[in-house]
Amino acid sequence: MRQRNKPWADDFLKEHQHFIIPNPTEHKGKWKALFKNDKPIHIEVGTGKGQFIVGMAKQYPDINFIGIEVAKSIIVTAAQKVLDSIPEHDNILLLNENANDLREMFDENEVAGIYLNFSDPWPKNRHEKRRLTYKTFLEQYQKILDPSGQVIFKTDNRGLFEYSLVSLTDYGMKLEEVNLDLHAIDDPTNVMTEYEERFSAKGQPIYRLKASF
Ligand code: SAM
Image (cartoon, rainbow, N blue to C red):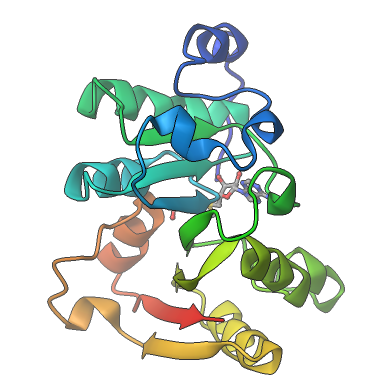
């Protein structure tokens, strides 16, 4: 995703610490207390500009959502969407973090759903370990995900999708949905991401899988 330098981003993040949470490791095991309720927590890794997580938070008020995005200049756009669309922002939090080890931020079984949307494909073989569906990431997801929860992955990238099917299966995950053309079905539960809108407008099929451990 294209990043523009936004010199005001640091101040913006500081001003909105009530929902863009600094030092998330301090909240490990205590996220429900921060939301002040017992609702399930779903996370998105690589939230980008926030269309998906904000749309989900609006559509599912009984779920708490946490969006994780490493790029400061991008997460501020997501934060602005939160302010514009969910002024109370009571079921959504954002983390400006690298999700390289989610176990530092979340306790065992603390999360009830994990979304990976249009993750960077890292097509070169030597970059396999960076793909968010590589086995070391699956190990992390398994630790923090409640056994009844799912990993839900959408992409336009056929290579990454095929790789992920193999990686998840080799890991022993159970595939509960494999959809090779998501927009060919009418799925009212599907909330589109920015990338999804862009690629589907070009006529590219969108792939989705749902899997559990
Ligand atoms: N999910 C959005 C969508 O579908 O429109 C954005 C997709 S974009 C290709 C991938 C995003 O993931 C980028 O904004 C990137 O900065 C973020 N990202 C990549 N690796 C990450 C990591 N390890 N932790 C947090 N965010 C990450």
